[in-house]
Image (cartoon, rainbow, N blue to C red; front, top):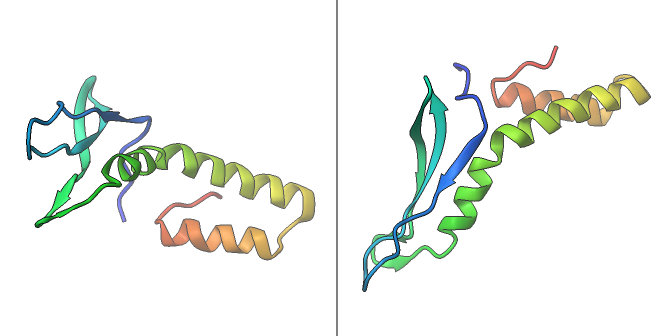
Length: 102
């Protein structure tokens, strides 16, 4: 797995919809000094409303910070208790995400 786009990631608010227009949310990162869309959440999927589009966008945008905090938690757990179940669980999650913390 290749490295993810470095954070921070932000959300570009949609233009206010008129009638049945879409209100999709873009997740944006600065790449080479310019804002670039790296993901998008959708207000409508097919014919049904997808109300949590903004919440999903906020969760995605928080991913780089959550990863940073997860790595920090793993180091602190190891410093306090040595290798244990929590440390190994975080290590397995980071491995699943294609990230090393060593």
